[in-house]
Image 1 (cartoon, rainbow, N blue to C red):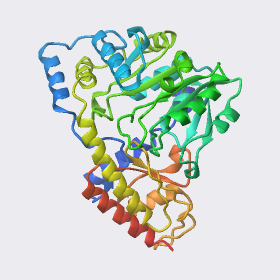
Image 2: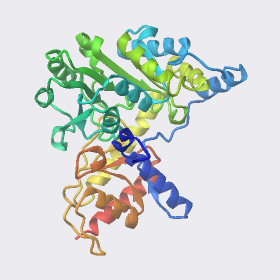
Image 3: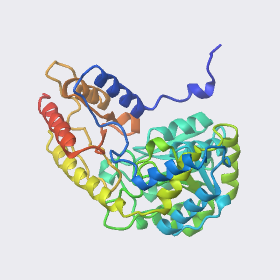
Image 4: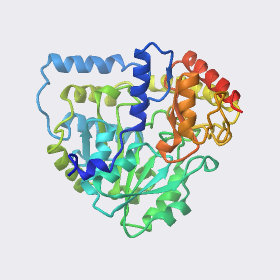
Length: 400
């Protein structure tokens, strides 16, 4: 008899977190390794947000709160959705959770039954399919290759929907590719979903404010109002406000779904950290101008990384429209041999070669459901990025 549950056996450890742990271990051994595997902004939490957290401690806001968020934070989330997305939600339509992953987990576990299908475009964030598997559902993948800009088409979505489809998950800008759907592209997908009223829509907008496309950011409930009643719009404070460790995610959606998520949360984590909630109120309602400056810094890094990786023999790096990742196609190096005679037969072998020989850590494309490719996070300094990309160029040039 297994000592662990069947549900636990249906999931794998996060590949991105595993690589980050490996990088930390190598650094502790004194190895000069450059870690580009973690999806975490290198900017500090803004001072006015930190001060709000400090004030919360001093004012003794250290007790339990309502399970799925304080009234103040729900109001702040509603304010954010109205200001940024033109979406109107009541407090009863808002859930606050311990990070965006927690939000997604609650929604899927609260709604997915055995045999339910969840459509996930690939490449995808590593946790989507594992959460679906944990809930007993069946992930259904739609491949969106580099030739499509890493975005699915309406025809692909139409073909993937069956009577058992429960959800479709959209992530724009995307982790891992940085691909971003325009309003017109979302409308095309929305038209398909309108013809299939049994399908719920989950839109992961965590990278909303890391956006480089010439057209404004759009989310599907905004451009397709008829989908509002079956869309869960997910966001959080981690990326835009550099609050990864504060662990605040949130969502707006139909009341029945928010209530179900709250029921699950009441028997798991209970409320998110009260101090983090107070800081999140300041983040969402305070000055937003710093986002423009940080976005410009990310875009400058993106341009440098894309250029340098495209100069590496065998790599083809599309230009991302958002987030802080690149997802180079590695087809041109598969089948080559390292100077030590090792065959590069997969993207996992390739990133192992980069780590062992170039001392650069990335995450292999198979972890994101689309190979051969790999993900690099450029949420670090230009100096570090230039050094890492030079090492990758040299490592690719050494392949025969």
